[in-house]
Amino acid sequence: MASGVKPRVKVPKSAAAGEAVTIKTLISHDMESGQRKDKDGNVIPRSIINRFTCEFNGQSVIDIKMEPAISTNPYFEFNATVPEAGEFAFTWYDDDGSVYNDNKPITIA
Image (tube, rainbow, N blue to C red; front, side, top):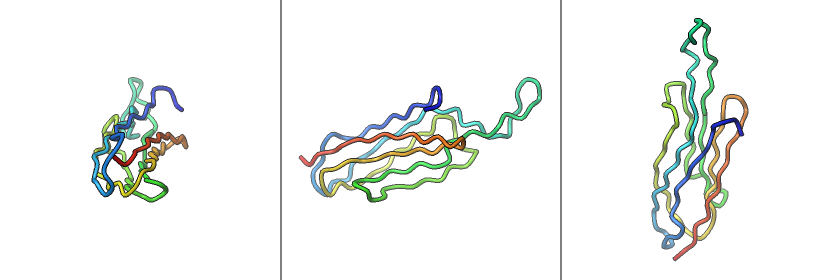
């Protein structure tokens, strides 16, 4: 994992079968657009998280493509229906080829 890049995810520990839960994700990342210059006038290379996905038990929940205008430390909040106990898998894809993952289990109450 690149220095300083940290995903954070908040998922309820349990839910009723069929319940929609709110999921919150944030990844600490500078998100450099490739359009700014450093103090010497050199273009700072683009470096962004360009895609974020979430799956539940192997099924796609959300798939987001990000562009250079995305803010530093992108935050996403979304709802997902929980049909059964299982695991959410979160993946962030970086321009430099790095992939960041986090998994969170959820039980049926």
